[in-house]
Image (cartoon, one colour):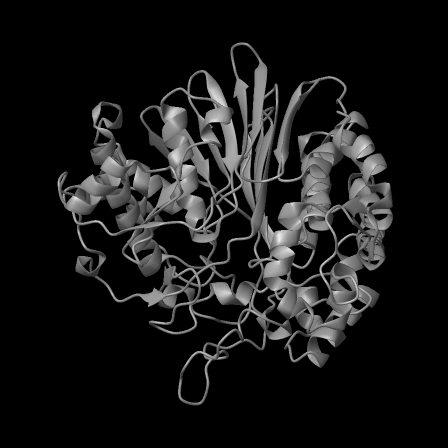
Length: 557
């Protein structure tokens, strides 16, 4: 529900211009939206810990950044509790409905039906975000769930001013949103794009959040809200059932771990590919002294490491509850040494010369991330998503919940490619109750002097962005530098280096091309990294929010 921007100045003064500080320990929060960062500090100020703050930030992002995440999506929360060393990954990735099957997006001739896994109710998997919020609050937080959800409920009820980035993404998906009157009634203004800084109110979403606050997971996965979701999805051609919602469960997983030049790496485990691909690439690069190589050779070596790590992603990775993944081998430094032996320092290896049958499967880019750490070392890195901007475009009437289109992250057919061209194999085929493979890479980096917490949205490019930031951390730089690093990316297929404008000099482009690389400039700057740092010795904190987005990083006392 959009209103004219009459309250913009008041809202910006109240929410964007005031820092809220926690009692006791210093805390740093970096998130993709100022209101979400503010929500985290509000909860800290009420006596919550960093895990309560993570609930507040997650829920706030679900309201104020609906293009990237929401109650209709899922994600991963990577946690570290300093007092007892507990470290875990909360896997809140969405699951395929019980009625899902391998060929559900193919026609009678076995060809992919365009956009069927992207647009509308049939594209929606069973959400994990609400269950993740409840689990995080009840097991790791100090405050009642209702307390931590209060800022998000308030933002949904009273509204907030939408920005230019929001409008850009809304315009991109406006054609789809117009097809669904309930969705259009929330995000459009009589079928048209709203004006910048208009006030977006979401009263139905506020009621759904209130039900979650009052009844926990039952407030979403059973009862009136669940009934509205299932009925709405079925009427719109989807396949959800009450059993799908009632049977959804969060999974806590052991994070994947590695080390690079004295840096301990802790990252997301499958159903995310992020941690394994990141560590495998760093293991390959550990055999080189990148600081002593010239810029062209350095970018070449990083690209070749990306190529091999993403190739293994396509062959081996999927939902670990459904398939056996050779995790130990993929994380082995000896295995990386074997991959490194195939790299020539002066010549690119074409991707088609790497072995194995693969499937081409992309991944949406409009996700979100936030990072939190306090001066004791308690920390959260969380990457959340509904896949493509505004997900499936479908909202079940009376819920305010924008549903994901994460079914598109499964491998629908060998050789099929959508907009982003990420590859996937039979390990990531559709199956009932299976979690689709992700590239989300919430990560901790730790050396003798400091701890970094970071992550970013960006679909298949998430892992390469975190990789470049990790290499920058290894050079001794801080969060302001990590989020500014010029970005380039290679994901095995397509066999091309994609680079941001100004990320490559003309001489680098020519030098890499002479080695046999294909290069392509990205149409826009990508990613929205949120990063924080704790200096162990001084107990000081630092935080940075990527200027490519509209987020906010704050260190509070």
